[in-house]
Image 1 (cartoon, one colour):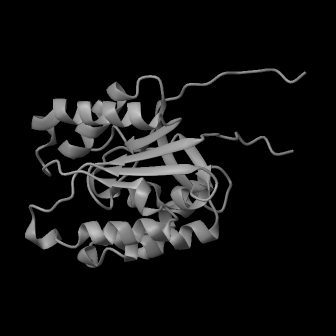
Image 2 (cartoon, helix red, strand yellow):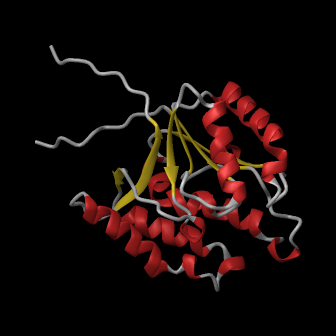
Length: 216
């Protein structure tokens, strides 16, 4: 008998600071659920003040399409990269409006182990804005320290390949080690090994809200 937890959400929201964050942390999971539930992906900065990153928004949309997310469910804001702590109140208000308009059942955001100032600000304000919602933290490997997944979600070979294909759309980052397909696959294999599965996407628990019932 399979005793795995079935984790249900009619609406799932993925929140990230920059284009590529969500795909690095959650790409396989998004591939796994995008055809089964309503998925919204919200990125707070378009990174357009950096002339070297002029293509990342288009690459982000192409990446999300591979994972099965339609354009109308992809939101990219214009908060200034590396200045999120100074815009903390505006970010909180932005996320409160998102919650009021969308009412997600589950939110995924950066792990609290992330050292990047923008990532950390987004996580703190997400926990404030979505107080009544389950929130799980994902890892962006280049900027975290001490991340260990406590919540593992099984994914399959197709999801792994879709995540690799999605990240390959970011030609801006072709030379970056954290876009290496072998690294991406190895993390999913490692997470799977923790729970005796072939592949798994890993998250830490920021807040889980549950209700227990008894079978009659």
